[in-house]
Every structure is written in structure tokens, then in C-alpha cells.
Image (cartoon, rainbow, N blue to C red; front, side):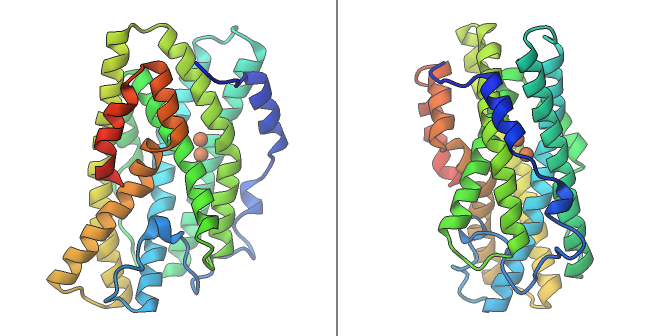
Length: 303
Ligand SMILES: [Fe+2]
Ligand SMILES: [Fe+2]
């Protein structure tokens, strides 16, 4: 494929990034509920003009809780996938094994990071926020797909994280410092993951014929559909939590407007922002010329 990534260079970059979960959250580093948690590009609460500023902030924070949970959930299938991929060729290069095990270790750290942030949220928010799951069941359904399809889904997630951080800066809002730090530190490590996932894709595609690659790309789209079903349920849970937290019942018309806006917001956050990422589309096309068109045709529904 057309890139210059190597396991050795990625490992070296990963070793230069060195943060601990405990440095980002806990102790005196509590969440500041006077501020929004999510960049507006992902939360999309500003357009709901019938909500007061306080209500928009509460909905934004509930979307932050959702972000913590859903990211922890997707990383539940990345971790075993990377371990399995490393294990089948343990003697195929020292840098490869070390880089992939470090990738897995970082994802385990991220799962822990999202859990710690979520515990802080649950402790201080004061209102129950329901979630989809359990994560292991969703991971099981994703991992039942062709490894190449799962690798595409993971590449999508890695590049998506890059975009989330860049957009949180561009939005230039007064975001909670802990949440901004979460997006930044996740971004720092996911930059290496995106390169490693591209290298994993190289070795997986070597063993596949064009028909197998075509059906794996179809399965990547199916994984997106599976996640979309869960996300739509999560969006309904978020609106329920909003009504509970604010004590403000939404009228049927308001609920419908919230649903329409938030349906696209959650789709953009976890699906559209990955599937339209330039680097993701370029890798897709390098693996199978023309494949990006298939994804670009369905992408507007998730943007
Ligand atoms: Fe991660
Ligand atoms: Fe990652």
C-alpha cells in the first residue's frame, strides 16, 4: 500500500508518548459541570433553539457521558483483535510484536481511562444515564465478521479519533479542561494506532483475493449498520436522561426535533467522521481501487 509506515518508527513514536490514566482524572481533577464537555461539532445542541443555555449544556454533558461509554465499548473489540493478530505471527519481527503489544496495552489503558472518567461523571452528575450493551456482546457480534472487515472498522475508529480532537480545538469553546485533555491524550496515542492498523491491513489483504476483499468491505458496512442500531437506542436513552436531569419534559414536537438532530449528531460522531476521513478513504482505495466510492455513496446518511 502507498504509505511509509514501519513498525519500528511507530514503536519509537509510541514510546515518546507516555501518559498515565491517573494524570488525567481523579483526585483534584474533577469534571467541571459548569462547562460543556463535548465540542459542538459532535454534540450539535446549539441548533435546538427551544432549549435554554443551561439545558443545552446538560444535553452536551449527557453526550459526553455517551462518548465515554461508547468509546470504551468499541475498544472492547479492538483489544482482542490486536492481540489475536499479534499472536499468529509472534516470530515475524521483533518490532512488529513489540509495536502490536504496545497498541493492545494502550487500548487496555484507554478502556480504563474511559471507565475512570465515567465513574467521575456518574458520581457527580446525580442523574441516571442508561447505556446500551453489554459491551462484550457487541464486541462478540463485531468480531464474528471477517478479520479484514474488523480491521477496516478499527481503522475507521482510529482516524475518527484524530478528527474529534482537531474539531474540539477548532470549535474553540470553553470546554471542561478534563474532557479536552481526554480528547488530546487519546489523539496522541491513536495517531500511532491508525498507522499500525494500516500495517495490519497490509498483511491481511496479502492473503485475500479480490472477491474476499469485496465481501470484507461489505461486512465493514454491515458492522457500521450494527453499531448504528445501538447508537440510535443510545440516543433515545440520552434524551430520557436529559428529561430526568432537567425535570423538563419535551413536548412530542420538541422530542421529534431533538431526535432528528441528535440522530445525525451521534451518527456523525461515531460513523460519519470516520468513514469520510481522507486517510481512511485513501487506504480503502489502495486496498481495492473503487472501494471508496461505495462508502462515499452511503456516507451522507451518517453526516
Ligand atoms: Fe483508544
Ligand atoms: Fe486505538
